[in-house]
Length: 188
Image 1 (cartoon, rainbow, N blue to C red):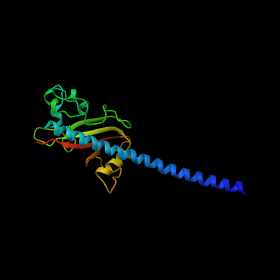
Image 2 (image 1 turned 90 degrees about the vertical axis):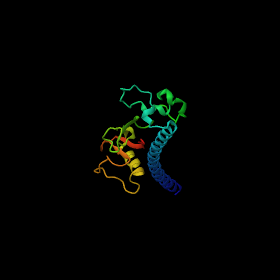
Image 3 (image 1 turned 135 degrees about the horizontal axis):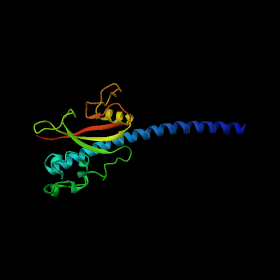
Image 4 (image 1 turned 90 degrees about the horizontal axis):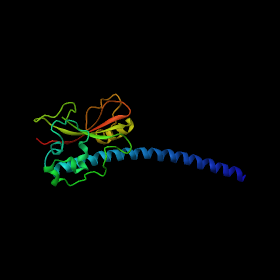
């Protein structure tokens, strides 16, 4: 009789362990996606603080050659004062972020680019202009979670819905995706 009770107890504990492990694993994924949303917000705040400290649009303070139209390393001005023009270095109060690489610890690489609110047109002197933050290699599920957090607090977008509107955008419905975030706007 005692052997049967022990086996039943072991079976119940095994089932409980499997269920709790499944729930805990799901929570880890949710926590990772919440952390990604927090990182997006932290970088947005860092860009805002940087621009406030400098007193002008982010792009105008960068130490780049006049004919350099790439923005691959532009994000590094948040942690590296050498990326800031000499005239603005005395205003630099960084580092503005707690990392010193474009490489994300879970996904791909962070980068920024400058475009109008539709993301398709370059900035001009008399148009709106935003800093767009992008992160490569974000799984579709994580992208959907971040998108739901920022753009759709009560309704999740379906895969058939275009991903080219709102604050959180994507390069399409691929998996993994390019997470694209509209951050701060240039004041004209």
